[in-house]
Structures are given as C-alpha cells and as structure tokens.
Length: 94
Image 1 (cartoon, rainbow, N blue to C red):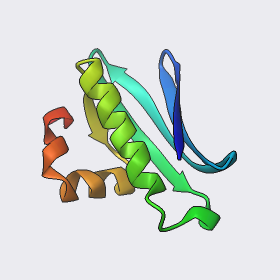
Image 2 (image 1 turned 30 degrees about the horizontal axis):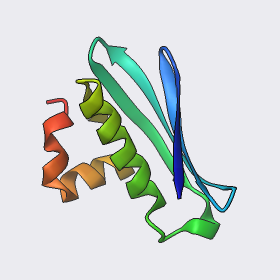
Image 3 (image 1 turned 90 degrees about the vertical axis):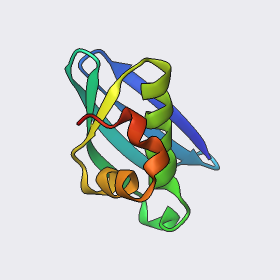
Image 4 (image 1 turned 135 degrees about the vertical axis):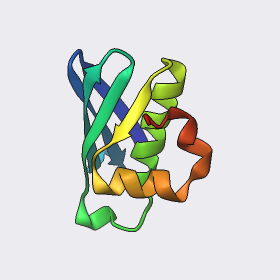
C-alpha cells in the first residue's frame, strides 16, 4: 500500500493506493497554527477490511509528529482509531 499526502496550505488529503488503484481518501483542514482537523475518511469498498483507513490515520500521525502539529479527529473513523490506539495520543489536540 502506498500513502501519498497532498497539502494545499489550508487543507489537504492523504490518498491510499494499492496496486495502482485508489483504495482510500482522508481529508483534513488546518484550523489554527499547529493544529489540523481530520474531517473525512473513506475507503473503497473493494479494499474494505485491509487496514486502509488505519494506514491513512497513521500517516497523519506521522505527519503531525514530524511537523510538531496536533490533530482534531472530527471524522468518526479517525476518532475511533485515536480511541483504540493510546500510543498516538501525543498528537491529539485536547
């Protein structure tokens, strides 16, 4: 699986590809200095159950850590990952 990030200053997205096919998309928006909000995650039904959503959230966590950012997981899927994985709480915006 390949995860690519496209940042467009105020907003951006992570796109997951498997074997050259779009497997998932997760969008975000920068809401204030040092904080971005994950607002939507979707996975192509063909790739459901293959960890695509989790991989995109973890790519966002890595991006946040590398850039000293915090994340607001507004999307219910992203929120569920943060609830299940306490090791990523360091980038959670409280």
